[in-house]
Image (cartoon, rainbow, N blue to C red):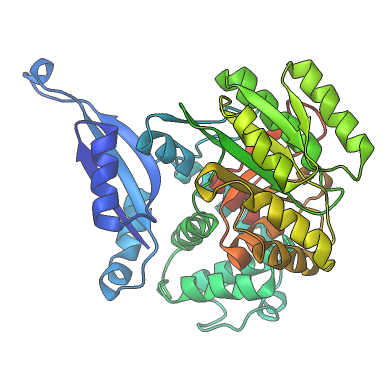
Length: 405
């Protein structure tokens, strides 16, 4: 991982510098304004400083990793969604009622996590930890004790062993035996944030209609999630929104969506085929966003799978977005089957529902690392338009390491 700072007269110019040197996968972790100093400061313009991170495997970046992380400890984390806003000034993110867009001071995060780990070290015998991961250093090494505790914390959060081992292996390759606990935590925290990646949410672009499909198994909360997002788009961004439903197998789903459409005073259209979908595209071309509910299907059934595929591909790729809605309470083995099935139909962004029904959020990291699909939203209740937020990688990383929200 490489962390560098860039200065420029504007945020956009600083971001462009970061992207030019570090590439498109750059993560923006901090943006601050540097005020001019000295007797002539009134004649000088302030500068914008951007701190950027990128995951890399080159020897030069490995050599300088620890120095870069220590230099970044006193900065403040900033979500990647802000970067998306700055990079596309004519494009707007959906504003959510209870958006988890908090910026965590890294120093405070590490202090909190270190206190938790220190307590666990005192209460947990070293022998117990060593049964979960093979040590590469002496058992009494503070860095190795910390790594073992982090490993077990990830497993207790239901992070799959294969992904936990991958993370630990990457950390062990850059951590020195004499590294302190805060250095280890800083590395794993930054690594988790990079693995979780930039959050991709609904974008509204002036003069362009987006047809947004919501797919996923039955019972995960697609219809309620659509209502929450429709509300945030209409009330938050004053966007012109319409609802489509292709879930003609469940009358209750149509009635539910019709009730939401009536409350929001937006149109609802029932779609029975890809032909009707193409016709509806013309009729609703003046809208900013059309949110499309689909039936929860068994992808083992080829006919049902073909129906979803035809519906999605009836909209040109440049005009459509697809969001796969998953429940955070679903077993990982089942999530593998679901995500692989839908991956064969279309690429997608990830929405996780029912976070209020589980204490473990490891599946968010599991599915992200399994599919490489961007994270987008999470829901934590049935209240419309509340109980939905943009996924915050910093928040997820903190919780995975044992931090409390």
